[in-house]
Structure formats: structure tokens, C-alpha cells
Length: 442
Image (cartoon, rainbow, N blue to C red; front, top):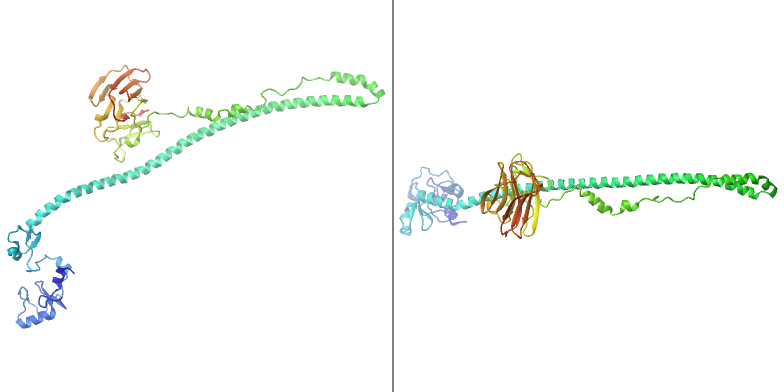
């Protein structure tokens, strides 16, 4: 037990734990027998502690537990007075008697209401960083929950795209296989038919020759008189028998196996190239503004019909309707083309790897912008310069020579030079695309 619990359970008369305790209306508790003996001795029903009169001979309330006492205002254990003051030096509650005692004479003592108000302010001030941190943690957890769901959706979408792409490749291979097998079957049928016709012709010639030979050989086995009697007719039959040309196996009679199997994989791959495309720049969907939608092959971008609920990950651009490539360049020469066609508002260029993605990202951008029918170039050192273009290009080629510090733009169809930035690049550079109008395609 705590010392306070022991004090609540102790009888002030016998100084022992109360036996069969009773509590007076003044909240002082005594042993039943001790209280009766005290009253009998004093001839008055008064509290032995505070001397308050009791209207009942036997108090009806047997015992007030510490829990029930806590529901009332606490009182001083020494003086049974309410706590009305607070000592700032000792950080202790005081009753009026404690306040006037010598123990707290030189201490800073305040009324409980005043002290409580000041300490509440102190606690609130201390609590504010925790509350702010709690809100932040809740926000980050919400973002993590959203990110977890998005990861699942990304995986499912990627699986679907991979399977569809392989189904497309499988269909191509199956169709190519069927075409090549059909070609083989056709050649087999043609050459088998020709060989059958030749075999039938030779069989007829064999039959005719065999019959003539058998008849002549029979005459040769006949007796001399009989032979001489039929010799003339036999000789005429042999001489009149048609002699075909010497038979030969025709050239090219066999299946052209080399044609069907030679470089088979290479030839199929060559034809497969006609159905696939390669893009030197693949867009990173994890960097795209929520108002943009990328094509399944990650080579095109357009404005979404409505803003998407996407995780606000650090890589995602949240101010401009833009997206960057999945690979950054920090050396060498690189080139990519963007089909702009009749897009009325777009930006093409490069963004530094070290530049933050949130808010305004101009400090790390070199770009060509088309908007309102006008072309402008913008860079970290140039807030905007007009550029003259002979005609609006349908396709723009972006060329980056990182080592020489040159970023150039050309009309892909006419090779007309539009503009070149010169700068000493030190960071990795990501291809950058932005649009708030029609779509763009790499």
C-alpha cells in the first residue's frame, strides 16, 4: 500500500488499520469501537479530529474507499483542509494551514486556479510539437496506405500489360509459324503431285515396253520352224514399239529445306521488327503529375479527364503537368523525337536529377515551350526568350550532347534548327515533357 492508502485506512484514535471502520460526515474514519469509546468518554458525539458535531449516534456510511474519495476534491492529509494553493518551488499542493507554515514561507505560492492555468499553458506548449508530429505521422501513414494500394494496382496493371504484350508476340509467332508451315505444305503438295504424275507416266511406259519384251522373248523360246513362221510379225512389233527418252529424276524435285530452315530465327526476328518499335526515352509513371495519363507502353502522355488519386511520392511532380524519362543521362550524346502534331500547349526539354520535384522546378529546367501560338526558350538563367519558327513542326527532335554542354531542338521533318542551349552540365539530366492540351508521343 501507498502511504496515502495507509493514512486513509488508519484510525486516528488507535493509530492502527481501522477495524469495522465508520466514516463521519466530515470524512474522517475511525474504528467503530474506538469511536464509541471516545464518545462515551467525552459525552459528546463530535469528531475526534476536527471536533465537528455528529447528528447520528452511529454513522450510516461504513467506509469510503480511496477511489470514492478521489471523486471529491482531495484534502490535506495533515490538516484535512482543501488544497487551495500550489507551491511552485516544491511543486506541491497546499492547504491554507500548509501555506502559513514555516516550510513554505519563502516559496512562491499561487492559488490553485492560477497555478493550474499557467501549468496547463506550459503543458499545451510542450504538447504542441507532439500533436504536430502526430498529425504528420497520420498523414504519412495515410500516404503509405495509399502507396501500398497503388503498388498493388501497379503490379496488377503491369502484369496485365506484360501478358497482353506476350500474347501479341505469341500471336505473331503462331501466325508466322502457320504461314511457314503452310508454305512447306504447299511445296510438298506441288512436288508430290509432279512426282506422282511422272511416276504414272513411267509406269505406263514400263507396262507397254514390258508387254513387247515379253512377247518377243516368248518368240525367242519357240522352236525354229515356229519362230521363222512368226519372225516377221514379231520383228515388226518390236520395231514399231515407241522408245521414250531416257528417263531422269527432274531437278528441284526435293523440298527446299534450306529455304524453310535457313536463318529461320533471324528471318522471323526481322519480320517481328516491323510490328515492334523502340523508343530511346521511356516515361516514368511514378514522376507524372496526377492530371496526366501515360500510354501502356510508356511512350505517350495526355491530360487526364479528372485528377487521379496517386501517392505523393518524392519523385512525383506536383506543380506542372509534366513527366520525366525513366533514365537520366550524365555523358555522351542522346536524341529523341516527340510527336506534337496539333498540340496547342507543351514544353520539351531536360530536368536536372538534383532538382526537387515539388512546387516550382524552374531552377533545374532547360526547355522549349509552345503556348498561345508562340515559341519561347527558358532556362535557369533565362525567364523567357522568343523563338521564330518557319512553320509549326509536327515532330520535334531533341538532341542532348552532355559532354559538350549542348541541348538542341529541330523540326524532325525539315531538319530546321529551332534553338540550342549551351551550358556546362554537372548533374544527370532527365528528358522532360509537359502538356496541358492534347497528347504527346515519343
